[in-house]
Picture 1 (tube, rainbow, N blue to C red):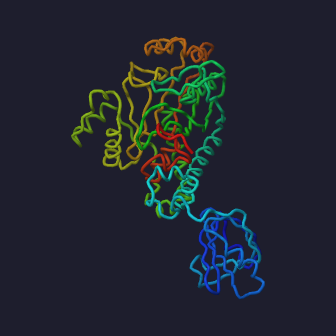
Picture 2 (picture 1 turned 135 degrees about the vertical axis):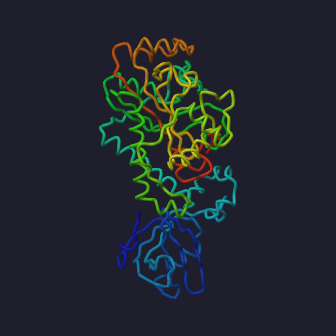
Picture 3 (picture 1 turned 90 degrees about the horizontal axis):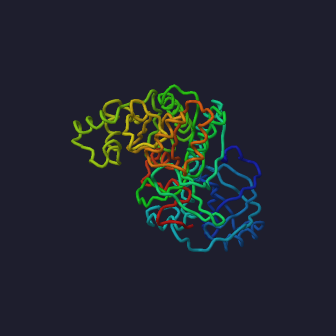
Length: 433
């Protein structure tokens, strides 16, 4: 990000938004905003050589974009960093309408849906703008961890010819007269890469879920950070890698943005210690009932729900002093057919962070005959024939997981909804802008 201190007494050319224009009797001021950095531009009206610039500023509206050439000077009287830009030339590159549809500085002046309708203005707010700077660093650091550990980045299709692997609804689209679907995840294709001989693969890409879920943590389109790797001994290897990945991501975020996150969002970035605590689902049920009087509803037995997740985080902090906790040993009826089982128990886990599930990970079933049997058990047949073929000709033991980038960001910053942490939110009632 731009550092004006390094530019003092130098001629510079800057371009940005005229955040605030003040036209006084003897002087004009412009607050120039470039991303979230600001500098005051000062124009003395009495100086004859400023005559043309004064006329430009007389007609300048807030949030217009300008190009300014001048010299940055120190001035301790200027509250904005003790510096000001003395311009020699100002060019208006685009003029803003005088009345903005929403306030930039006061997020509470409009409800969340009005803000989403005007997202291009809403993102000019510093708090909103920094969300995606922070998210970028989180993703960058996790990507870097995978690059450093010899993962191959792949790009899988989002238009698929068969409905996805889970029980969730899929978006159906017309594909030149045939039915196609938007991919819910790259799961099948990650495993195809493993069957192709790649030992470690990952992808950061959109996923689509046609679920009519109007909650703060669900969206119909979201960004998923998926990975898969081969030659594992058990799902413990998958959990270990996820621990290392999250530690790498959170460490980088804390180093670059920890102070800002605490100041702007009131959240401490905590670097978790590995290994994360682990608990079997049935043992968790007992703990939650004993400690909090909570009993899992009958229809959720063998799985978790939002209330269970919230209490699980409370338990993890009380028992282990840890923000993260792995929950294992789910019921096979609640897990996908491609999860490996041992003694009829799926070899996978959910990872809970700050009261919310952020991952379902597992060792996958790589043996063709077992996979076919488990698919039949779930009532899956010809629609996944192409997937089962990946395992006919040899496939190493493997496992993997996925993280929702938008949900991770929401939890990291303590924000109330995915609407805040997605560049453009997509939900059952939002398809624009």
